[in-house]
Length: 261
Image (cartoon, rainbow, N blue to C red; front, side, top):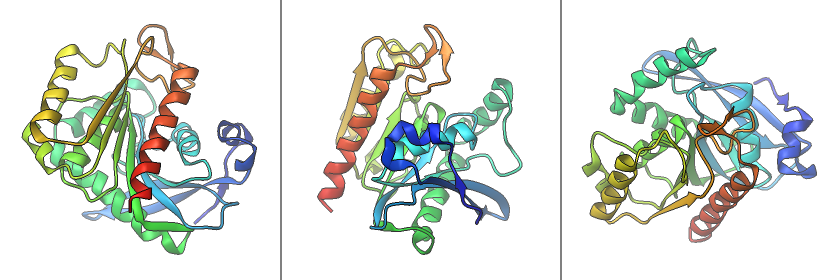
């Protein structure tokens, strides 16, 4: 693999200790189709760390998703950025991203299959990086948050699932009965992309299935509150304080579940 040192500005998101944060392309196949994700981790850490599959927003595998993965990874995790579209599909604008994401949202079985494939790829990275493959979780952002919830509904064998400002709807709410690990949803209270109907439906779904779930609703936050590049006031907008709280909530969740393993 080609190891790429992430820009120092990215490392700064995680603190001075992450000056060695790197990103490596990881090629794999699903049913004969080529996919390529990114393995992101702090190369200065020599002890095995838990791993997280990260499903990015609807733009897919990009430099910006690598930056987000670096922030999530810090010196605590190895993160695999999942390729949900295939190596040949790299959206360059919102229209292309909407088309690619909509196709997967219309086929939840395929969405789950591709997310699970990324989990399997991450498990296999122990020879490339110091990874504790017995301690794995999943996180996702926007479109990726919804994909991670679908992965949970598939019954995936992971320690926890965390959605950041993701879609909460599903065509098969009864599938929540397959969820066997904690679910944490980090939601902007003023997010116009998630309707009250969708929010209420998710709560009812989790309750009916008896899931170990949490929903944190951040006042004053809209969609994409963890994205430093989001700048559509009132709709998609970065909220640094809320982003920091959300990443801390993610770390607290994984600290809890990994300590119990």
